[in-house]
Image 1 (cartoon, rainbow, N blue to C red):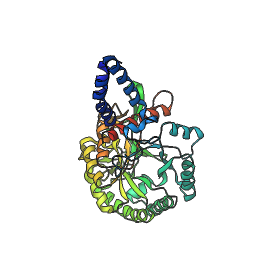
Image 2 (cartoon, one colour; image 1 turned 180 degrees about the horizontal axis):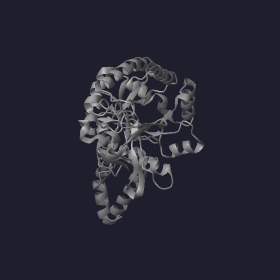
Image 3 (cartoon, one colour; image 1 turned 180 degrees about the vertical axis):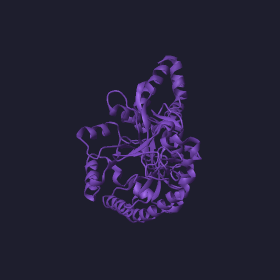
Image 4 (tube, rainbow, N blue to C red; image 1 turned 90 degrees about the vertical axis):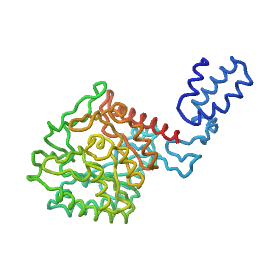
Length: 406
């Protein structure tokens, strides 16, 4: 290693611990050694710094051996919570699924199922299955009570579906699973034909001029009026209030938190159904005030917020600062898009219009201690796990950076 390289490494903003180590040993090395010996020892110190986190010498950085700085509380700030990366994993995992999770260094997952398997016994069995592999189940979704038009639009089976949702929460509580995501869209998630992002990777897209239908749970909701008539904003708000008061009471009694996902895409109306609640900052603020519960908060889908752009009222950073300080962000979907509405394509994390480092730093600054997941990953060559591994690796790098910066 040349003297120039050593000097560059000293100035590299890769972590306070490494810089501190060099700076506190620099003068001693210069006094005791001639130029050649100084360069030799500088090279050795650089090599030691690179392996120190995983070696018996890791104590020089103040990090106990075998500790993962991404999931452990820092020794210099014991009261500081640390956010966690979770994998959106299969509820029916094979042996290789466990290996893949463990090899990526992930120890939290979120799972999903449908109404047929939404029992306490199933939830509990999945938690125990993953825990046997050293992996915690942070949350469990149930597509049978997620994005339910009967609840959003007050269709005849509304009360039956709300009771089904309450049973979902009770079963999670009994199974000791602390979280679930809920979405309140009356006619599903709307997309148009897939488009291409970097390197020809296929990705979900939405073009408002071409949008004709939404999908959820195997159902297709076709416009121009997906449910035969136009609904008013007042109806959507009244139906939400009816649902959330019932759900919040059960969530509190069962110690389960519900994070509400934004409308996707967050346009004012689709198929005759207003998207007036979870498509803006002000809508969320009013909705959480109505719920008035410590167990009702946000599943902050960064991708949806970026889709909305100025339509959201406040940007992602401002939203994190407001709701994060109030401990209302429970889970984060970490994804990027190329541009806001009316036409967007989902992108790789490092290839969209948002600076994902700044978003993660904002979460760190409000002491977010939930999980964040890779979501809607573009399809890379060699199968879906390629994109997952790339996304998780990128997220881990960003997280290590914001934690090291303190």
